[in-house]
Image 1 (cartoon, rainbow, N blue to C red):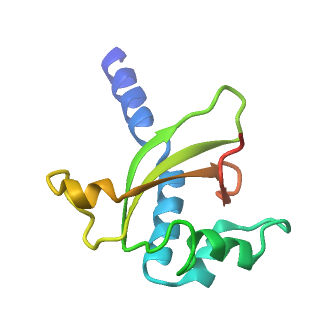
Image 2 (image 1 turned 60 degrees about the vertical axis):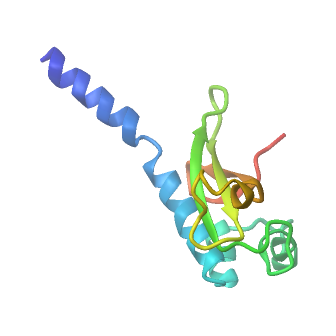
Length: 128
């Protein structure tokens, strides 16, 4: 019984952020494919974050552009009682994503932190 409980806890721990990770992967896949309207819908924007605002970050001339590939590098759990998690994403202007041996290309990668709300899987930038 103890072994079964240990295995159950280990599986839960390993897969506890799978829905949030899947949401970010869907979002980033849409951005990489240039389907920015679809990505904007996955973002679940608030009234304060217009499509124009979205494009200033993720569009062709946005802060993170060009986005040709990405890699999820971690998930940060904020302090207790937080309503979401922070997914750390490395973004590259190269396709495929450069290996660690390609130091020049890797040095040009950018990191984005994306807040994923657990209740509805809406995305935003992390709170300060």
